[in-house]
Image 1: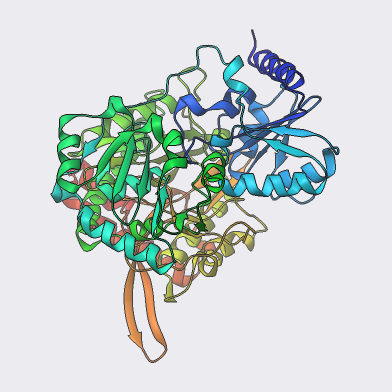
Image 2: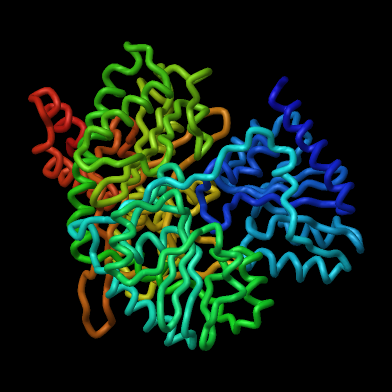
Length: 602
């Protein structure tokens, strides 16, 4: 059966269940019970129903139509994957495109019922849906999961072992973090908290898991009260070391499977704090029904873990140097031999993954490697398959976006290479992407600035060409945790549900402008930056960035005629640092000669 036929069949079965449940609509977000960005295959319901494999999107299925919302990173990919399924692509933030709430207001009838699994939508999402539906006389029911009834051979949920980090790998002891957290929630008027975010819990307890591919987290809930701490984890994930650690730290271990049963019975001697973005709607409703006074705000743990300690920063710097050296060696191979070896995108991804795995302390990739040639690179989150992978040939760009999880840090880096000659227009695009990346990397700014203040530095060189890359410029990076981390981000657009968070010394931020021309090529250049203190005077405290990534930018794709003198100086200065940092890692005269040429001054 063709893929689109399978999708149509699944939607048919879902609609049949909708009728049996006297409902007209079903909502399927990209989510697990913790509102994680990347999710275990067990929870990929939206992907199962739609065939769209991107990491962000919402599917709304009605008795007569189906609609998928996703952002600009995935427009090209979604168009291809939704072809002939009958699902209509809703391009988020495009002019004239209704968002999901506007669509509900316009398309739902009074009396319509929307079904959703309350565990798989956030508290904030559930409340807004209920409000909008109520305004038009429609309703929301969150008790049933219809996908579970039609998904044959559904993957099992994960309960992998949990690792207790050795002291040399974490920046602060659990007891200190807990004390700081209790102080933070007390300042907000709470005596306790229910923590749902997986990376927050791993950071707090100095634990790491592997329940989600490339994300070193374990499925868990944490309840903090004024008298104790309970950690709910999968029973199959328990081992002697974790039990011993919990006893030493006075952490009460409980079964993850009992959490929802226990929730209404928990005793809080005052208000309880939750993060409405990371807490699911069912959990929120159960707390409300138990009569607990709820305080909603961004989790203080989310803010605390974003600022890396001096010890963590030292480990991160070391990891990034080793990671940069391996990527540079890989780029040398691509430039010199990928065409003659008749290799393809998939094989190149495997090659780089294998090279990275040889770095001491490597534990996993930080995300599936994006290895894309020509038109495939126009899909921001493209993943090459073993079948149908494009061969590398001359006359276009090859883009590789990759990273690793290590004992000592999480990496993320993108480079784009010209394979043979490329057009003058392509060179212009590449050069202006490089200019934008370097402009942000060299920014000096007052403390208190958020990413929204800085985004124009990276984007302006492309806006001057009437080009935009339909996504943010930068995201935070976790420490041995998720490759995408809040609360800070670099972006120009302010959405109603989001806020701009000030950058602080110790934060890591990606810097990744790009150009994506559907059917032709994609260009992205990404460095990871460490926010640092620069100086302080009567005008305030000034901050700046230190690059952690030291990898050559392909000079074969640079046209100096499209660089201003300041931008050319930035490029040459960066390449001088790359040469100095990486030369000790080069293993032969041939590699050293190649690095000299790749980082030569223009």
